[in-house]
Amino acid sequence: MILGLVASVPNLNESVWTTFTSQTLFLRPNVQTLLYCQRVLAEDRPSFEKDHNETIRYILPNGTLEVCPYNSTEYAPVLYETQDEHLYLVDIASYPILQMALFSARDSGVFTLSPPSLFLGSWQMGAYLAYYGQIDPTTLTSNSQRMQACQGYVATALNITDVFGVALSRFNQLLSLSLSLSLSLFFLFLHKNFFAHRIVSSIARKQREACIVRFDSMIVMSRGPMMSLLTISD
Image (cartoon, rainbow, N blue to C red; front, side, top):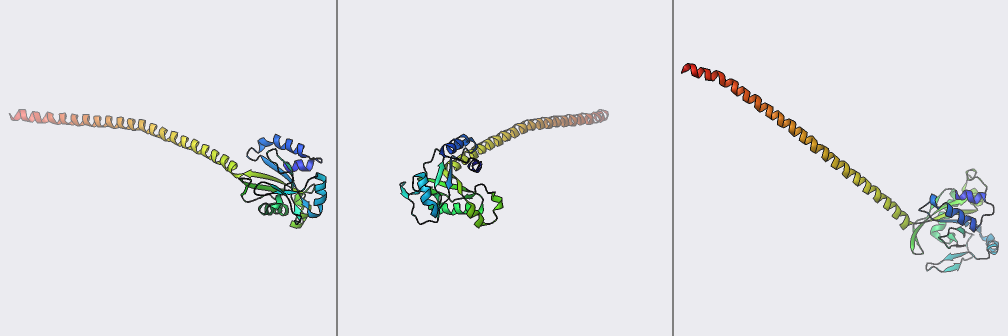
């Protein structure tokens, strides 16, 4: 969907990106941060920075911004971002743990994930997909072709605590529902078995009473001839 926006809007800008990503937030409620990173080769960096009137930067662990050294073969500065971020022209490729995932997405043509890392006080994990412009990615059959055609990356930043917190909350809700259902079925089972026990007990009691009646009748019938014999002998 986001790649479709990048490919179909020739004059894509920050305003269009922000509007589109905010209006489609309901499609990704657990992924609020969405970025587009432009691929900038080393020889194109001066003209890129001149066009945007800003230098490509990176963020130090203490949160301060520094100008990226001019010793990389390529960069991936954030060009468009959602309203929750302030990473404009921050080079994602300056961080080795993210660079590996970026270049893997560039060369493979599939989604890649970066390992969890601590960034600005929160544990985050990134997902990346390369953008090849108007070229159909399925026609690129080698890593070198994909690397040459790559123009940028769509990236998402996942706050691990938030995402797994939501997942755990849903699991707990399902667990509570399952437990409630199990208890309901258990008590229903006991309820039915209680009445079944009463019915069986009633039947058994009636059967015992019938046996006693038949036994008493046999005693009465056996006493008749004996009494007659005793009377005759007397």
